Length: 328
Image 1: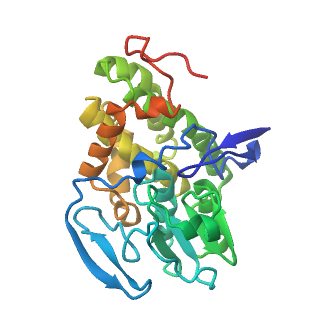
Image 2: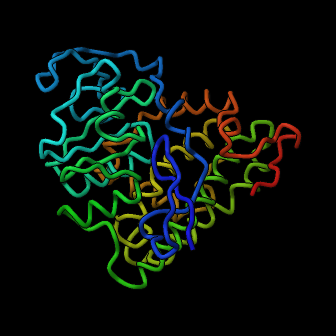
């Protein structure tokens, strides 16, 4: 049975067989999520310095590391005014955006596997380089990996691609019981994300009303984290593909629910709380996190403008008294 999948910023739909659940979760309507708002530069990131880049022969604007932890791997965010690197010269390149949760997945994986041979290039989502779409990836989204003369996209595909074509610690499980558990947890990611964004969009609702909608999503994770808890704090005991797939979204939900909707996603969920604490200690992940203030301001702006409703991620609740309406 085929299913639609979206695993990238500015994602388009492609089909995948139901047997490939370890490669990607099912569809969620987030095609514009990282293309617009997540591509905007935030005004509070005002601490800037500039220096020249020998690689690209131009001056880039830098955001200090205190403003965006480990954000820029190669000198700056490339925009429409930036010349291209030496494309398809044999150097593997990851094109990503530090504020896109899909691209963050692959960025984390590259760091975790210690793939220093991959050049990480950050692309502006709101002002993409012309050469990126014309010469690298015609669909124009991130993440994308340039390797062996071709370009591969979609975040979940790329996680398994890295395992298959590069060295470093394996992300995918080898034990049959863990393969099955991983497939089940990844299959739920569609529902998890949709419930999360629905709850965040309930701006006229009380924390209890919001909790009634989103509690099943976070309870699912709490239960899933219990299956291999004797082996470690992560979903399958050890850090791997499932943790990388969920971490960027849980990072954003913890901040937005807690600070904007007054709902603590960790309350009554000790395993999830322990997981968040453990993930933050994984340097490959923590070094890719956006500053908390940045994400908070970004999500305030998006939710104030009913962004997830406008782009069709969640149903319109304007006629339901702030309560969620049925969604297919």
